[in-house]
Image 1 (tube, rainbow, N blue to C red):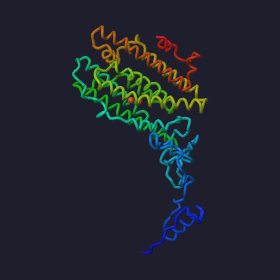
Image 2: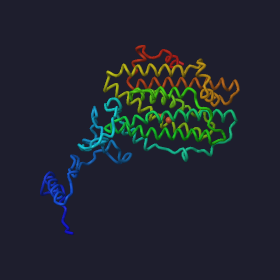
Image 3: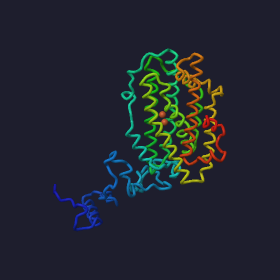
Image 4: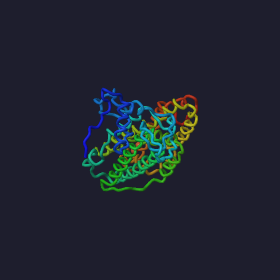
Length: 380
Ligand SMILES: [Fe+2]
Ligand SMILES: [Fe+2]
C-alpha cells in the first residue's frame, strides 16, 4: 500500500478554500466523500467566556451561529441548533412548539447548568439514621403527607415530560432544563416514598383531589398555560410548603428532605417566572390570555387557602400537616396545627403574588383583575 502525505488545511501557502478543494480531490481520487470536512466559520475561534468560574458552561460555547435562536423554527429533523442541514434528513419530529416566545426564557442555559450542578442523592444526602420511633399518630400523619407528596411529585414529572418531545431542538435550553426537572421530580418521588416506608409506617391513602388537579394541569394545550399552572401555581405552593418544612419535621432527615427538595423547587418556579417574563416582553399580545390562566389559578389558590372551606379542612393532607405542625391529634394540637397551616396558606398566597409581579403581570393586583380574596391573605 502506498503511503502519501495527507494535505493539511490552513497551510500558510494557500487559502482555506483551496485547501478544502484539495481535500475533496484527494478523497475523490481514493473513493472517499470528504465534503463534510468543510470548515465552519468558527474554525479557529477562541472562547471569550471564562472556564474558571464554574467550568465550561453551555452559554460559554454557544457562540456565533450556534447561539442564534430563531424566532420561528422550521427544524423538524432533530438537527442540533447551528449544525448544517442535510437535504435528505427524515422528519423525526412534528413539534407543536416552534415559536421562540412560546417556550423561551432568558438564561435558560444557566438554569440548566445550575440544575446539573446541584443534583443530590436521597440515599446519601439525607441523614436517615436520625429517624427514630415517633408517636403513632405523628408517624401516620408523616406517612400520609409523604404519600400525598409522592403523588404530587409524580404529576410534576409526568406533565412536563411530553412537552420535551413537543419542542423544536432549536430551543434546546428549555428542553434540557425540563429534562433536569424530571430528574429532580423523580428524586422527590423517591425521597418521600422512602420517608413513608423507612420508619415503620408505609404508604397511606392516595388522594381523591390531586388526581383532578393533575388532570387540569395536564389538559393544557399550550406550553405557557401548562407552565403557569405547573411552575407558578402548583410548584409555587409546594415550594412555600417545603420552605416551612421545619415546622413539620421531627428529625434531621425530614428537615433535610424538605430543604433539599425546596432548593430544586425554587429552580422549577424560577423557570416558570422567567418564561412568563420573556413572553410578556416578546409577545405582549398574549398577555390578556395569560391573565385568564391566572384568574383560574387564583380561584384554586383561594379555595385551597380558605380554612373555612370544609373540602379543604377535611383533606387527609391538610389534616396530616395540622397534626404534624400542632404536635398531635388531640383537639388542642389540631387547633394549633390549623393555625400554623393557615400561616402556610398565607405564605403561599403572598409568594404567588410576588412571583406574578416579577413575571410582569403585577398590574392585575392594581387594576382589580386579581381575585379580591387574595388581599385578605396579604393583610393577615
Ligand atoms: Fe418536586
Ligand atoms: Fe418541582
